[in-house]
Length: 315
Image (cartoon, rainbow, N blue to C red; front, side, top):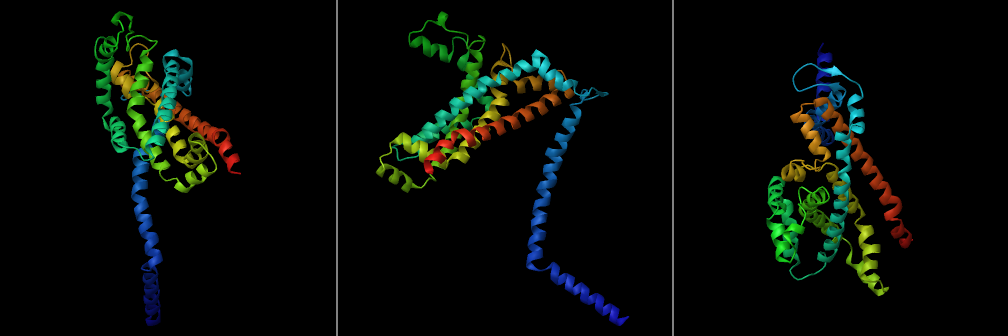
């Protein structure tokens, strides 16, 4: 018995020494630090998402009985005009996001080099991104209202008020007006990300290019663009994703009236006004799949078309 107890003590001592070793403690602490975020991520992200996917196969409200309808909710998204037509509005915001990226990249390229008062310009152009989206909506609601700020400025420039369109009621221009608010608000964010990437490019590359006779445009195409490709792809993905899920401008400025209800605004109406939870869940899943598809196509296009010339030039 004494030998057995000694053996047990020896095993316990060896286990304690192993458990308190630096390697095991590092692994144990890493697991503990990972466990809490993973539990929170599962509880508040993956589990609700799985529930939402399950709801998308039912005809249901927040309270009451549920009726299994299979894929009918998904079919309605693509067959009923009230749902599918809102997806078409994403084209307006996609075009706006491309304009936003061009403006941001141009200003970032200019402001990345020594420029008098450059930091002041950066601050002014980044400031709109810091403003709350609801506040931006109210600002532009009065800005575009008939006879207010924009009309007053154009009238002072010589335009006749009767010849100006109703910026928020005319279906030919109201969506472009809302897109303009998004461009104004978000281009500063893209610009700051571009500046951070451009300033990290080795300055010796510019000197070597100048010795070889490269002009500023060639330096941009073959030095700046290839070296910021990761940030460029990130900005494109964020911009396209944001254009697909545009919500604040049409919701606050026009409340989705006069053909300005985007897919997100319509989904909000279906879920919270009509309380068609199953239909809204199906719309959310469709939006997620579209975003995944758009992200894949963007990465494919950048890999095989946009950066091919730069890689060939490097060779």
